[in-house]
Image (cartoon, rainbow, N blue to C red; front, top):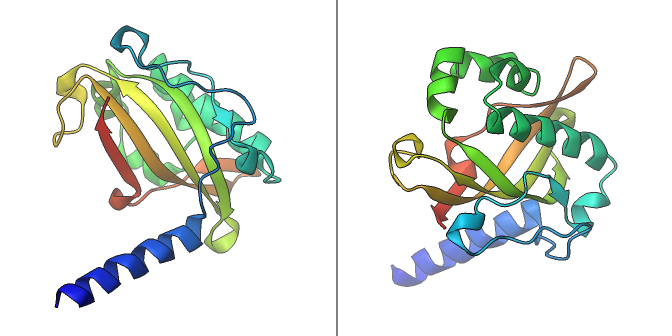
Length: 176
């Protein structure tokens, strides 16, 4: 039984690696992650790894994510809505969104990989740091600083790109 669990875990890891590839750690632009608490969350500038910078849609993806994170950082729901599909807007109506992000500041934002997805969509593997009032953090980890590693689905919408509706298992986070 233990061998079967081990084989299944290894096979799952290989499948994820094949799907999203090995993240490229060499940055196309520097993005140091701050280590001292007072330096968190780091720069709000979205940067690309060398591998992500090779994708033909890297410029549009970077601009989309820069707008998305800037909107969160200055609490501009109207601007945030322009970066996501209508289904995601319905999941987070304005009052709920403002309550969820009222104290959030994101930084150290790094796109590690951009890959193709179904129906001409994209999958973006990225990491970032968020600081917030612990009461605004995820209910499973009420801390003031989190490091996130997530896959964002990006779809083609109205002639441009928008963040699609993600799956709950697409995000991992740990305390800073």
